[in-house]
Amino acid sequence: MAKRTKHRISRAYMLRAYRSRNLGAEYLERGDYPSCIEFYQDSVEFSLKSILALYDKKFRLLHDVSEELVGLVESERFSDSEFREKTSVIVVGSRTLDSWRIPAIYGYPESDVPPKEIFDRRFAELAREFATEIFTHCKHLYSKSIYQDIEG
Image (cartoon, rainbow, N blue to C red; front, top):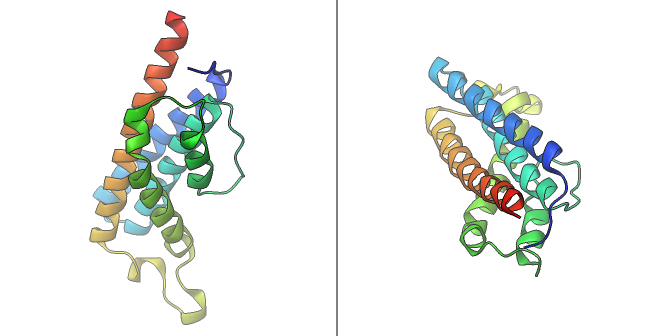
């Protein structure tokens, strides 16, 4: 397994992903579905950026970095087959939430449609499912990687 060097930034991203996921849950409970989607998207974004940073893989400063994740997972230096098997689900979740991010924040101003008229509870619950699954997979890989580095 390749030596990873970006533990501090990776940890910071993982903590942000965790906090955003918790905020998404709070907004879901309050019935603010657009804000819920915004925070769940943020959780997914920083879950993926945590893994990319852990493997010292450069990424664009965009919200969806699934393309970079695929590049990492398909590289010879990446050896975690369990995570590799989840990549297609992770990519779908990241791309879906990225496509919802702007309308969840701004709505459709040209049509005078606010975010709360676009996203209902079903969207928010699907965003929660994506965020929870992706965060769980990334946290598991992060934990395994940190432990392996400690072991040596």
